[in-house]
Amino acid sequence: AKVIIVGASHGGHESAIELLDKYDNVDVTIYEMGDFVSFMSCGMQLYLEDQVTDVNDVRNFRPEDITSKGGNIFNNHQVTAIDVDQKQVTVKDLKEGTEEQVAYDKLILSSGVTPKNLPVPGTDLENVYLMRGYDWATKIKAALTDDSIKNVAVVGSGYIGIEAAEVFAKKGKHVTLFDFIDRPLGNYLNHEMTEIIDKTLTDNGVQVEMSQSITAFKGDGKVASVETKKGSYPADLVIQAAGVQPNTEWLKGVVDLTDRGFINVDGYLRTNVPDIFAVGDAILPLSIPAGKPSPIALATTARREAQYVVNHIFEKKPTQIFKGVVGSSALHVFDEHFASTGVNEFTAERSNVEIVNSHYVDHIRPAYVPESEGNVRVDVDITFDPHTHIVLGGAVLSTCDLTAQGNVLALAVEHRLTLEDLAEADFFFQPGYDRQWSLINLAAQHALGYAR
Ligand code: FAD
Image (tube, rainbow, N blue to C red; front, side, top):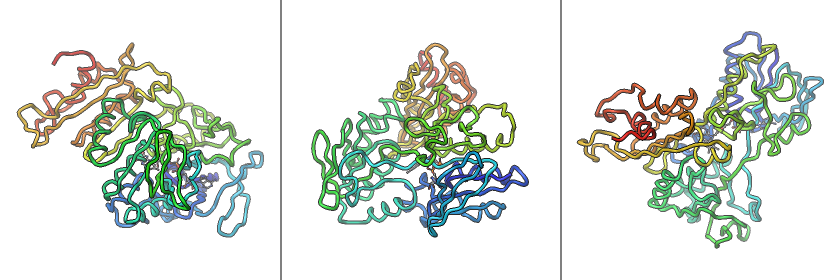
């Protein structure tokens, strides 16, 4: 069987590797329109902060990783059309300008998304950047050491914008962080935790400008200011990290798309066209806690979707439905570390899911351990269904690294555990690490109203 994969990022890589490892006699070909194969944007911050040696190492795989297993990969090759009757794709060689028709038995789409320019004047000015992929990463890296850039405006306070703000602030630039929502990371964390994030950003010199609506970028050739409904802010560089566009223009009229251009898939990650599957950021996967398709654009979800597709791709009638994803992320914001999972106040409202959130504050270790020994404040959110007590989301935040506890909450959400389950769960105790009851036990007990 011949399988064609569109896009060589997380979804494309996982699909190819799984196909080559799991099946004999499968002819696997990846087409990637970019020049650099599989830049890992998740690793961009490490690169920008000089924690990796070479930009060419920040990738998911090298072409040899696929060809050595018998697969094929073509960079600078864009898939521009699908002929569903002939089961062929049109592939354009972007270097040569030539086109060919290539037959497929199965087609996996992992064409992802592209960050969007804001719909305001001035996005074409010099020094107005986006943040994704190899080319932008190298440009941002150069800007970090450009002394003529003093004021940096970051638009969008999701995790990508926060990464940008932190990187530039650490390089001594004056950073202004804008968002139209009212709190930084408001899509990821509930308000008690975003207050801590807001304070941390401010303490580290980032000017946090929330509830701001950008009206224009202004400058003479090069950007000089960001204009909002409230005022004008100097900016020698703008990083736009506010919104994405699925790379699906070329599928219009052939593959069903949502009104925002995401690929519509069924419970088996199949498109409306037989033998065409879609994974990754270009789809809206089923969110387990929300119970409906949701925008969860993560490498982790792309990989799970790709694995599922490959496992079932040759079944005549798939029986096992894709169970969905939880959506978990972790990040450090200067000295704070957080991990969040499932739904929160913001995403639950967007998905019309009824929730209650319980916010628990404690110290990580027994009271006799001094703060200087790492007995620091910890914040835990558990978000749950008020009727069934099923855990639908949660987050941990501290200056100590609690992110592994975030995965405990992620597992609880995936397996639909209740507050009662977490309150009693048999976790370890060792005073070098935690309290007599483990943090997640305590947070769940708190949510259930236990007095302690
Ligand atoms: P994409 O990564 O969007 O890649 C799609 C690929 O398809 C591109 O290479 C594109 O050139 C190619 N393509 C598109 N159309 C065509 C076509 N017609 N023909 C040929 N090729 C085509 N996720 C995490 O889980 N953890 C993190 O820490 C994390 N950090 C991130 C940090 C940053 C700065 C960014 C930008 C993202 C981060 N993500 C993270 C998200 C993660 O990168 C994405 O979820 C993931 O890359 C999605 O993979 P994908 O395969 O769907 O598509």
